[in-house]
Length: 168
Image 1 (tube, rainbow, N blue to C red):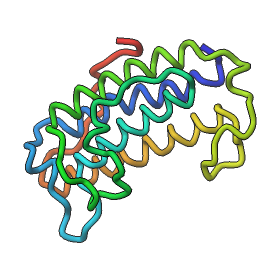
Image 2 (cartoon, rainbow, N blue to C red):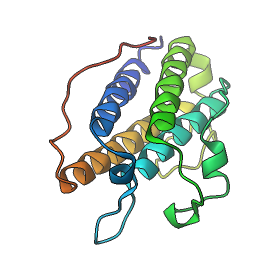
Image 3 (cartoon, rainbow, N blue to C red):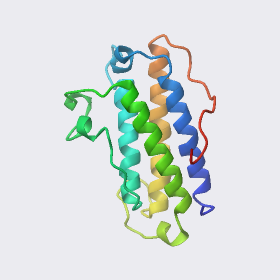
């Protein structure tokens, strides 16, 4: 693994476990519930994160078929979702894409990280490395939202218990 990718891979790996920890003990109804003030539901955030990892893999040249795409097709926001995946479908998709991402990050070579103009995310570095950096932050942001919503639903706080290992 390119040493510049290693800390980002560590963040993605940690977030894999943290999102699973956020989903623990939720019913389908709780996962779909939105807080009174509005915003996203946990299941929307989890599906969005899995979808974003699929996007990233495609951009890195390691595509993986997204089993959640039928639910997310053409959706720009939560209001656009007509049918929801089950919590178990989201868990399975999250684990599968996370394993594939860990493998893809391990295979990245230095030259593949340096192409400029590779993305249009709001960071100055437009290389694939900049894209990885932004999406690691994006991943963490939404995991944090998920943990917050979990607590607002009256569930115990998300834990930092590790469940998976890179490439498992």
